[in-house]
Length: 206
Image (tube, rainbow, N blue to C red; front, side):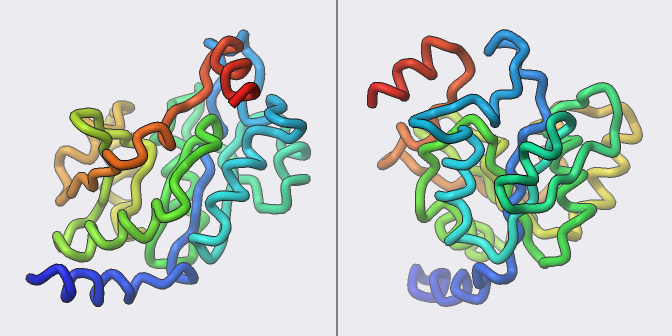
């Protein structure tokens, strides 16, 4: 398949066909146990920056959060908690988003990466359609970023079975799917996340 054909195919994944899921269900241990998505960055909650960058790329947004639901709802989008208990990690958030989404595709981004690429979804869609894959994962150089992923919503039964079997590691789950990694070497800094107070201070000065 030529590059032109791949791009023509990717164009069939319109923003309206994609639900963005902002993963904010963690406990923020490295940030001192605070809810990272609500930590202020340049005067606004970190999740608000993520939503601002993601919104033009998708047709709908869901926020996966397990605490402070009212504060997240104030950002203007539905809030969906994990159905899997005990803070089971990003896969539980993905499961919640896939279960709630009504679009044929879902993309996930973490709440602590406020600089995500403005063309993230388009490039992941290009890779997914071009490879005929079920899931496309962003990669910078030799580092995959599993929480930046676009997938077909019909992977939900597979994910549910994995979680029911006690699986929790995201890369172990998608190892059994048709996956394509999409390179973003040209904008590697866009994937930096803010896990600690020092990283927050550095981002505030940027």
